[in-house]
Image (cartoon, rainbow, N blue to C red; front, side, top):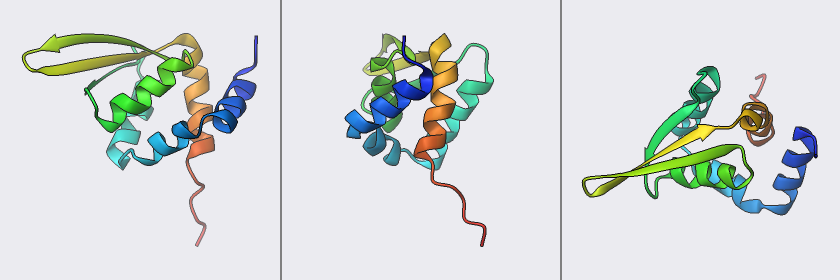
Length: 104
């Protein structure tokens, strides 16, 4: 089994969509991921086709999140849950995707 570091390095090298999807997230969208990492349940809710839904789906393709969807009225509510592996992978991934703050 690959290490988390190797998984992330390979994913970032082979899948440019990760960076594009992460770049489409607002600051609020990004903060939700941090909150998921601080919560033992690790469950986030979003709506179909939102930037979060697209990014979380991408993370689920690597096994870092899982999807549990339900249809509510005419809006599809999506729930994603961090996997055990995701609790280790996502913080490392975010540190690689988030540019360092300037010391100015």
